Image (cartoon, rainbow, N blue to C red; front, side):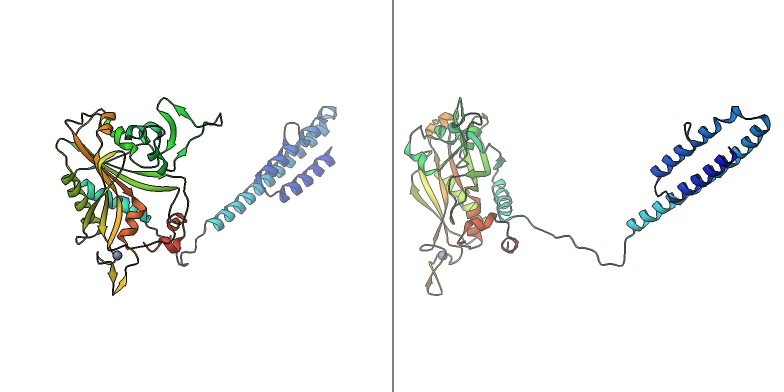
Length: 357
Ligand SMILES: [Zn+2]
């Protein structure tokens, strides 16, 4: 038994000296010193020995136990300091190296234009309102004086939303579900809030089934709506002038051209003098590349049709109003005097392009 104890000590010390982590060390400790470990196993022979042998074995067992515990503590501190060293190495930072400068971006051309547009209209008391860009046919068409099957709907190449369970267009009590092809769906929605007068700007995403060099399937529009007693075309003209002079420059001239929209009567196209040739149509004797004859078309406007007011629960005999709407991307490009050959560049995330603005 004395030999067995000596053998155990040798093996335990050897095992502890090669362990490299706490888990292995603990497993070795249990194997040698645990309640069912090798030392306990050897000691179970004790009752069969004579008293003298018992005394000698007990003394030896205590010595072996102390040696093994000492070796365990030594192995433990060896492993701990190895880990501490490794962590210190990982945490070390060379403060003499030059820093990495984070890339500094700026807001997208469209976002800049939206902020500028809103700032100008807010000076006239217009508030930005938000309305859905996933809406019912009713708000996108029917309430805007475009009954079902009316050919005026055709020019808005509309996306309809399919019912996920059936392979048909999703329907509700207010008709089919559409991705709004314009921001005018906000008109009747704003009127239905029942608060007059209205001075609203709705800037949102619009969607049309077209993707060409001149058209994007998604672009932004902003929609203005003013409704009060005695609002006239003169007010429309005044608001239009105010915006144009601040957004495009004090020298910019404006023009209304008669047009036809279903939801306004009378309707106009709004033109501004060209930002490149300043309305001359010529630059140094050659025809201006941006405009036709000195004018640029900005967008549509008009006096809100009585049927639209009625759809919004407003008495057209008492109240009148005007509405206007045009594309944000287009407006932003016109300010820069840009004629982009491919408007899709706006959303290709090419930094060489975007950094210019
Ligand atoms: Zn021009």
